[in-house]
Picture 1 (tube, rainbow, N blue to C red):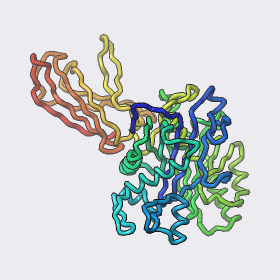
Picture 2 (tube, helix red, strand yellow; picture 1 turned 90 degrees about the horizontal axis):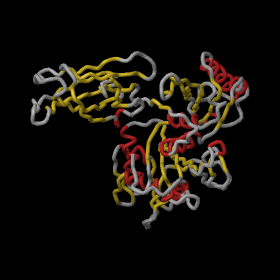
Picture 3 (cartoon, rainbow, N blue to C red; picture 1 turned 120 degrees about the horizontal axis):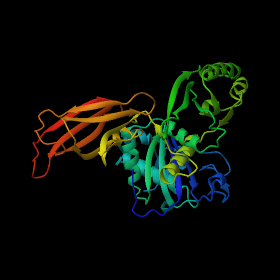
Picture 4 (cartoon, rainbow, N blue to C red; picture 1 turned 90 degrees about the vertical axis):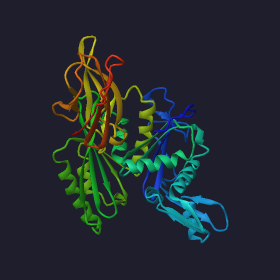
Length: 437
């Protein structure tokens, strides 16, 4: 996360990054009332949907090729489609695969010079954001959320380092995967679409099918959502009619035991007009939407939800695959009454989970944490035995607890004896324990 000292913008950007292209959606956060939507930066009108940048005016040319071209005998670098076309004309050297190469911290040799892949990824992002002008000047951007098919710690660090090179006065920069962007998109839809479950179907040209259903625990406070995924596939060489029938049967199987009020279709596999039987199956009591910019729009909504959440949208938590699925806290005595103090909130990504706090031990030689699952299940106690702690009167031992997570399902706890000032010096004890969470 990057925090600026003096935020000046109100534009929320969602940037969808894949190995081949990026896509940018944005909204201008000037809301008189949520029901009326947001100002559409492209037209000046009011819309509840973010605007997706198109490389061709008036067309749905949303994908910006992830490519740079170093022009021959010139310091000029071109980006996106301009880079691809210049290289095809023999006017320079094309560089692709920037995201993967930056992740592997590779150097790229172009025209006899070495360039860091991370620096070139930053240059590419700078050029893509510059394409938004004159609608959006860089200093008008308040928040950016990057989304990708999969997001882990190393990918997040690569993206944040590259964006940090741009030195923009942005309030927040966050990274998430497609499931979380879908969740944010869902939150911002009307109540009818959110009446029951929402199904996301991704279909690629190689026949791979991915179904994601948003499930929730409405008894939790706030409501907790998570994505349940199911992978299927269709033969990539199926003709229109056979493909239609095979997909219809697959959808019926997936929907058999689920209540779904809206279905979202995305991916190049859905191109063409082959869906007839399957469309009939999908539309039975459901609303169906198809588009190629759902994730960048969802990321733009995420930017809004993280910086200026509309009052009409109730608080909720999304559990990504690398997120903690429990609240981790401690029972504390406040004004002679026992209360629960949360140290790590469910939903925090394991690589961002770190907390350090001091406590006064009431009695005994144990430090007890309470794990409360938010997806269902009973709380359980996680105990760190303080063997060798010096004998002291009750409430005269100060402890420092440090909680970290080496993985999404592992909690590491370190407890240090701080003593009690000059009255009871520290015994120097340090205790560590690890738990599956």
